[in-house]
Image 1: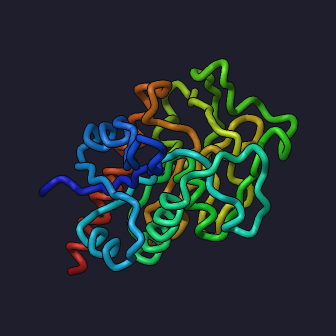
Image 2: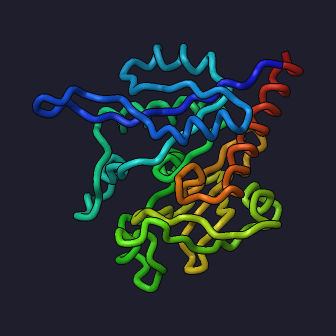
Length: 247
């Protein structure tokens, strides 16, 4: 069987002065997908839904990368002064992409802002600034210590439990926003000991979807974190096999 094709959305930087506009993605996202046994296909920001539909027809799953913050105004909330917004072109494309993924019940893994996008697109919401919403929380963004890590409390029987249940459990932390109310059809599968949500997972039998707030692809990740991508690629292969049997 051929390797599954995993779409990876991309970040966008508008032209400024003599610098042209850029579409880019951190290499480790794609490297992790390849190391897990799949092929990575970059998804640039689209503004045409039919074009995006044609691309998704050719993919077996999608990974949504992290990045700057989602604009809370798009979900009916006020803009917090600490929010560092994504470029509107990227966010508009990503929200359309996520809507189509959900309609198709396409396998999806969200990382950082990608997990937050899964949650808000499906009816959940976000804390806009952890230090204000949870004053007693641990530091989740330390500019003086990019290697800052914390432990997790896992939900038994979850994907996170399969990944970390028998290994060292410390993940990186580099965010100031976090999931608040979890979207219907999803459950929390990992939390920081202070209660901040660090992973969610679909409870729907027809949709393989999960996300992590931490970054298993980053340089600050551990070798054990790689198993998250192996779980995702394995789930994509199972979904692809089920579709072929049904056909």
